[in-house]
Amino acid sequence: MPATILDGKATAAAIRGELTERVAALAAAGHRPGLGTLLVGDDPGSRWYVNAKHSDCAQVGIASIQRELPATATEADVLAVVAELNADPACTGYIVQLPLPKGIEESTVLEAMDPAKDADGLHPVNLGRLVLNVPGPLPCTPVGIVELLRRYEVPIAGAEVVVVGRGITVGRPLGLLLTRRTENATVTLCHTGTRDLAAHVRSADVVVAAAGVPGLITAEMVKRGAAVLDVGVSRVDGKIAGDVALDVLDVAGHVAPNPGGVGPMTRAMLLQNVVLAAEQAAALEVLSA
Ligand SMILES: Nc1nc(=O)c2c([nH]1)NC[C@@H]1CN(c3ccc(C(=O)N[C@@H](CCC(=O)O)C(=O)O)cc3)C=[N+]21
Image (cartoon, rainbow, N blue to C red):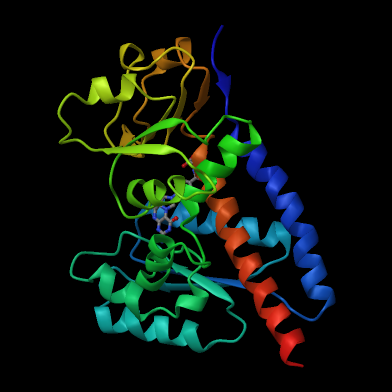
């Protein structure tokens, strides 16, 4: 039996429907969430993602604040826009699209953001909160992965999860998220330097491939019935190539394809972070009134 597809596109659409109602409730109480984006340079992939995020916002009723700088912008130019977004009351949350052009230090830019407006959950304070297990915005791709597994009832508690990739947006924070008491998975964080990657992957109930190496995970590496989520994004001849080879569909129990799997969930979780922050701000206002 071929694998069940973890349909991130359909799941994200359902989540946007749920968020639309929450945004309407906020608006009725006089609170309009607004998502800001800062795009630096003209990478077509990054531009596509940013545009997609704004059309998602339009669909659920979140206001959009779209800022752009040319590829020649300096770090000071970027920090000036960050300061503006921090100060803008219409902007309740924002993201700085990564990667930034060479010469602009990502950690400097992320640290300059107001952690309360960090819709990506990538500010060091918020990553620290994740480590400490205190509430705060969570990184969108890791939460999107957990939410997709939950909605398809793929067991997480007690599961052996192998994450391939240790980047700051996916692998490393996903390991932190999945090992919280509430998720309770056992996580092995692998990477391209892991000795006998195949042996690790073969032991997994859930495999998350986020290394950015096309076709890295093949059928003979996967335990029959395992859930395999393809998060790797590479471009081969202009088309998206994931980390998971096609033949994995014949042995896996569940597959999140790429495109159509985790990517749309990442965008839905970004909207969720914006809505959650606005709900919390509204609740605080009621308490202090
Ligand atoms: N500050 C920041 N936050 C991010 O969350 C962030 C980032 N920078 N830089 C780049 C990565 C990548 N990422 C994706 C988002 C959506 C899709 C997505 O929606 N993909 C669709 C369509 C893909 C297509 O057709 O091009 C899909 O998988 O079906 C993919 C990848 C967010 N990232």
